[in-house]
Amino acid sequence: MQAEHARSGLWPLLLDSLNPTDGDFRPWGSGEVFPEEMSSPASHDAAGLLAHWWGTCTAVDEGDDMLDVERRLAVTAPFGQSWPGLAPARETATSPDLLASEFAQAFLADRPRTRLGLVAAASGAEALTSAGWAGPCNHENDTAKVSAVVRDWEHRFGARVVAVGFSTLHLSVAAPPANEHEALLTAAEHFAFCPDNIRQGSRPYTLAAYAERIIGAHHWDFWWD
Image 1 (cartoon, helix red, strand yellow):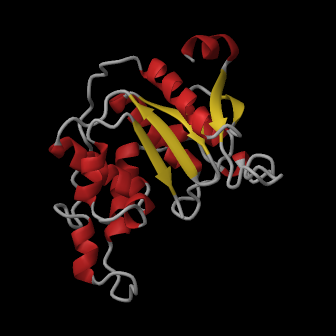
Image 2 (tube, rainbow, N blue to C red; image 1 turned 90 degrees about the vertical axis):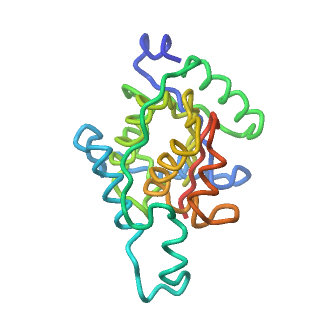
């Protein structure tokens, strides 16, 4: 990946679609991409973004029909509404690019209708903005902010953007959290980044349960409703 990118300046992304059997191949074939509406990832601070999103996602809404106050706070236990800060960076035990290549092969085997996109960008994180991807628009309209966080994960966890769909994002992770404490902090980042992963994921809908699933996990998958 790195060698080809160094020569061409093009970053490879596997492009998935909302419904691979339709003819539109949304959002890529249908033109539902908006690069001109995005800012620059360099304009945003990942730590500040995650803290802000956490505050928004954990705010107590007395009129919420889905969860009462007690159940809402239980979702993000043991942190409640308090932002715990970033998970620590970890040393990579394997090559992030080799792992990304292996994950890409597995992804293609599972989704053979996936297409290859080549994006002029410095990294996979920045390719999301350059491509004008708007998958998280119900959570964040400016994909550059999403890219800023993913770029930080590239450095801290050896993450690589492998595939992206209508409202999905798939990363390989060379240095995932290795224990419960690290996993809880990482889960808090994931909740701020993509609350639907936990609020609408597989039961139970709690940060602690999600943290158990990402200990040692070498790929992270995100979905925004």
